[in-house]
Image (cartoon, rainbow, N blue to C red):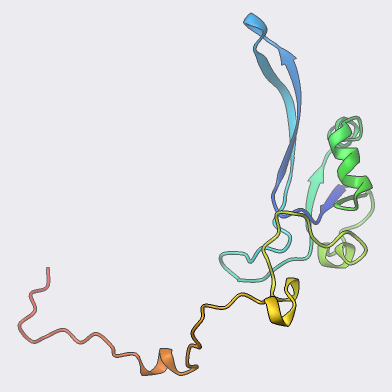
Length: 142
């Protein structure tokens, strides 16, 4: 049975356990990465997921449950754990905290009067009326 950790955090999070190494230098003993990416458009599809799922083992879940930072993320509503079935992350995310402080700004974050503008109105047809590059007949191509 797969265990899934669902996240609505914008960035991935690495939860680590540290040990003291030589000369009292901290050394990472083990870590688990929980994927992020909620609210960010994906490069290939330009889809913006509401939530992201990461499959973890029972040992990794036990390690995560013992960490204060993971418990804090769960308490704030950014993480949830499901031990049964493969559920669409967007469905799970609807019952979670939708955005963290690192998520991109959206037009709904501003009131109509405080919405940022460039100061100039860009005509809608600017892309269709832009001149296209036409190489001259004498242009040398390499």
